[in-house]
Image (cartoon, each protein chain N blue to C red):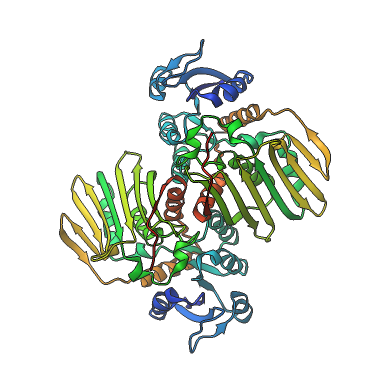
Length: 308
Length: 308
């Protein structure tokens, strides 16, 4: 099978730090162009826009969309209309409605659309999912607490409408929980702490349950100083599973079962290649839907202004 | 075909005012029970809960769920698990995730699930949809302005999380727009006016567009005194279509094409009978998804406290 001729659309931090090395390390891809109005990379054809890249690169097979969220829909649509397979960085869109429409378009055109959730490719995820399948789940605790000043300096868009605030990292936790838990779950109530000078929450407490009334609690907080926490704990009849460090470490009752280096994006690109080979799609909107549900159903409380 | 043995779950205002007369007027239904912890109706078997109705009524074929929104998921699920067809009042759930799960359950059980949007059965809707199909749509204006003090006195839940505020009537406009316009559309930006003592918006300005960049604007307002407005105007190359009075009147370029008495619920129950006969479902979450998108993407502005 010849390599997939891939173009990158949007060449910001995530594209440089994660997409580029993952593509370079996978012989199944050939990076044939980068479309970005500002950034370029030596040795790779540069285009000011996706349209320009499409016109100049007839051999293009697929694109990875790494633009700001509000541009993903128009860019993905343009690529699909030109018969290209599409990988969408997370979140897959600014709204659920636009993702739904893209999904229909990809299906009509028999093209691959991949709504990528990078956290799902963390080392401990597959084993956690397997271990939990068929177990009796008694309670779930999700704790996702990080310091916005350390991890998101200068990212003012996070605090604007659509930026999702603490749900920008929190959606990663939701992408893990929806992947490893054996049953779907639903939001029952939520408290959102919104700084007086921001549009989006700096912290959120979410109470979910599944159809067996299993309590599933999530605490997201952007104000965490000291140790940072990206952990999910699941109590079962056979013990407590802990998927910690964002999915890098898996423990059962405190005994480490697996611990490995983070290599999410290589896994993500391996999956995309499989999908393209089979001309199938993978568009699971569940994590973004939970975020939208939290904004719809959450009780907002004003808290102290956020000053970076 | 024998009549459908129907039970009502939740016997509040909407069930009395709308469901009851529509069921009574349709020989395809026999009302065999009402489940409500408080309300009852002379001449119809009363049950304190859906569970009690299911136990006492083996001949029950289907239920209409008219409970408060946050109870719909558990009640609908219980009915489907007992092999009953389900009609859901609008909105079909408190969250999108729970509606999605119900939809999967109905499909697995080969039962009918009907997420009913009553406004879609207004007299002018079918003709509006037909007239617009294939036309070039240039602009859409949706104006849904009513006086909350007149139409929703004492309904404090509207201002609480999940109550949706002005989107409680606004979702009817969205159910019409998604029904009559030939293409899906997406929210681009939104301004939400939230009273300082409320959790939900009292007014909303929404800017949507479709894939042809057609501007679709919606203005919802709960502070309308004087004439009340429930109108949609669509400019096309062949003139301006106006669907007004909540769908009761259809005009083209100001010439009235159709005007009729409101009989939404009879239409809704006729449709449910068709679905049950074919054991098919009709679960279009688009209107609720647009509301969730507006909460996710909207810019909130505090406005004067709402005092009834």
